[in-house]
Image (cartoon, rainbow, N blue to C red; front, side):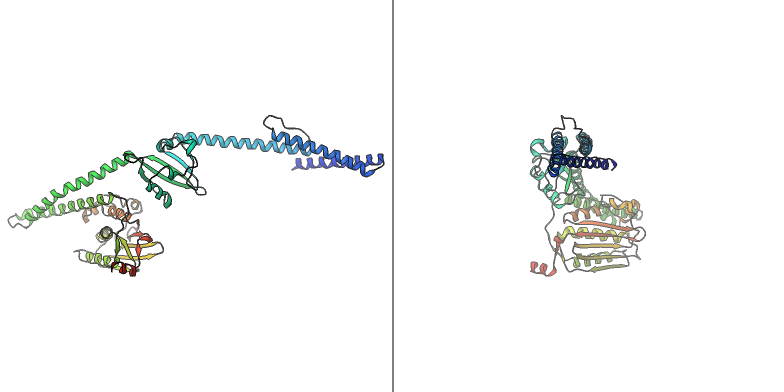
Length: 440
């Protein structure tokens, strides 16, 4: 601030000196205004000369030293030099950070692609170039959908749901797979992570095939064993001391049969990720049937309530929806004590249709909630065996809902019970009168 005032003071002092000199010159030549105008013209010429020197240096500052005109012009030159040095410092810092970013991303095992708000490629690392065959000089500015021509990938980007990755074939006809994970940032920009998951996908396919084949092969022997056990249990010639072991064997064979049937059902659901079309389902009738099934059990909760708060029909596969809903109701009935209650509720709103099952059972600790839909995952293994569960019910529910574009939400308070809620999108709802006209 003091330097700026000093520069202006010096400039004003020189201007005042020029005015005094012009007045004296005008008095000496006998024309005051002529002397003053001549002096001001000379002063202006000096300022224009300094301006020319500054402009010439600014245009050629990479090879010329800065001028030293002094005064206010000198302060301007100093400020320009300071700004130029600061700009060079920040530019060098940005270049250094960018080079470090390039080196770090080049060493990453995953491909990295930067996209703008139009899904056009701004930059990609070496691994992305290897996985997708991208070329630096020709593919910048190209929309990523034009280079990755997979319908699943295009739907993934358009949906805007990036919590999980999408896996698509690398090339048609090859057993090679790529995983894409989008991470939005900035103003509509996106970081796209690409990974080769061919090995994991092949292992997952082998696992599914093994489970499906093993389950199918186990079905026939189990049927034969169950048949012989049933015959022996009803044969009066069997000694009394063998009847209890036979009853236990029958119970265990029935449990194994249930596990095999659930594995086959799960394998069938996992065989395809495409959404089902289906038909309008009478949710009220289905819930009434499920309530009767619960009350028909030898041991059941004292109260089973059904609340139908919407007349809209649910469009989907009746078998899959019955399987999903019955698994949820069956779990609630198993873990709710005889003095407890179960509430079944169906309602709809602007977000879609919703079905919930609320029980007054022991509840589920929070740390177990994220893993509930994993196959064979048990919160309490001992209690699950006692109830005869297969550990596959919620996995079946999750896959059945995925085939309808729906999601499962679980909330629970230990000691007070749990609520399992199925959220269906709006496109899965149909007004009751429209459903009646369609079925007529």
